[in-house]
Amino acid sequence: MGLFRRQQLFRFAVVYYEFKLGNTSQGFIHKINSGLVMGHLADIDKSYFSHLLGAWKMAFWFILGGFRLIVHGILPNIDTKAGQDIVNHYQPPKKV
Image: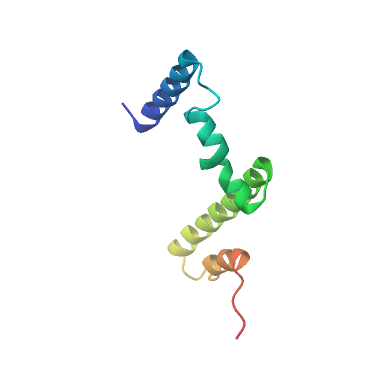
C-alpha cells in the first residue's frame, strides 16, 4: 500500500473516530486547523488563498527555472544565467 493511500486512510479514520465520539471541536482536525497549519498563516499574516497563490507562483518560477537549467545542462552555451536569474528573482544579490 502506497504512502499516499495510507495517509488518506489515516485521515478518514481520524475524522470517523472524532465523529463517532462527538468530539470534533477539540479533536485532531481542530488542532490542525487552529495551530499546526493555520498558525503558519498567522505568523506571516496572510490569508489561506493569498498564501496559496504566492506558493503556486513561486513554484511556477522554480519549475520554469528547472527546465531552463536542464536545457543549459545539455547545451552549456545556451541560457548561461538560467539559475542565477531565478535565484536573484527571489533573493536579490547583496550590494557591497
